[in-house]
Length: 564
Ligand code: ADP
Ligand code: MG
Image (cartoon, protein in one colour):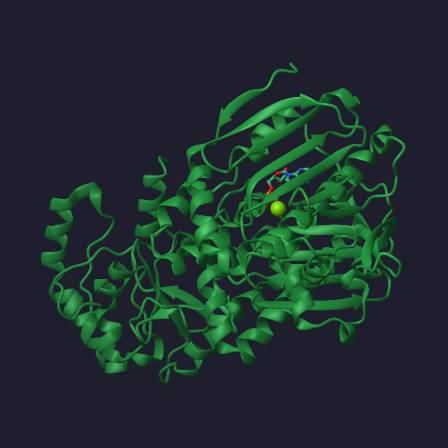
């Protein structure tokens, strides 16, 4: 299949390319960061695959990234000796956007440039950012382990299509050759390229090399030598002392590990000593990824052992409800040949995970306490995931419950800003329970007839309208010694808030109206368990109530909708 073929981009790629060139132009140097980031990922993948197949190293064990330029040809080339791609992989990864959430992303685009640029940032554009500065991109790649004659050359002007050709390439890995657009010649300078690399890619742990340049006194010009020069520090950022890492460096490192264009909301960097020794650098993104609710989503925590990359997305290192946390954990104790299977059963991993969860919860508590605005952003983006935690992470249930924010009748606003501590602080004299109502929508929760008596008595009720809420309250039955009580379940018991006289009156009324309630019960038959006189309502004539131990009406509706 040495033939050259022309293939069309997936429609979304065409759309993305156009949008990106326009909206990211003001920040065009990020193309280099993205291509270096991919080269570094490719090296990580090679290391991981080579753990089980030594032959992939071929005879080239020194992983590195090379940046070169050619003034006459007006090209900049980014090369790596990482995993490379075969023909099929090129088609899948470079001609298609395989990311989940692609459809929602394109639906969210508005045509407003500033807003869309922001969205692109969240979505991540990676490889295609090459077209911000190049009007033609050539990619030559050979997958590790394949013969030299099985390399692939991909080429595109970034318009509607690309060509593919089988070529020869001696070394494994990938060369990305950028044919610069008119007016981008300032990139043809080693000083300029080095400046960009140091700004955006200093944290990359592989050496990024360029050809050395030297002033030739005889020729009176700088000449390019046949000798390499490392441009970056190539030392693991997380292994440096905190005092030696700038906020900008933390931020750039985040963008690389999280495949995000935007700065993180918060991070925690700590070295843990003791039985288990490990370093953790963990970030909270500023936005939920498009695929937060997709169980197949990628990019979690990267696992390193003594600075050596082991694997991406080590799911065993974070519980599911914290799946949005990004970053690195570097262990001093695990064996280098640790596999996913070993991770699953390892007691060491359990200890590391436990410690990391505590660090993350501590970081969130700190945000909640000291940076209210950031915490509100965090809650809006990730609150639903945190709510899952009360059912998933029994050991930290109380801490998680403190982090949860609710809507309530105090503000009647959909924004979730009330903590359980706030609620308890406002409880009425004699109130001993935390009341809540669940419904399908916020509007339904807010106008539930069950709330009437509570509003009349000035008792605050939490308004729960998210899908996860039913699950949450089934696990969070108590907080700080107070029972959480649905206002739609069981007998209305306002505890000491209803005075003795009121209670007596109610009993008498129930007797007086027994004839009527019996009649209603007879005519409704099996549809209801019981008909009662109630003081819950102040303006609605009647409402449905679930038994104390029955499913709530809302959960019943959810299950029905799910076909159960
Ligand atoms: P992301 O890095 O977030 O996956 P990119 O657009 O940057 O998105 O890259 C898309 C995919 O193309 C990568 O996931 C990878 O599979 C492949 N790819 C890109 N550059 C390289 C490279 N230098 N070596 C091997 N594969 C690459
Ligand atoms: Mg990338």
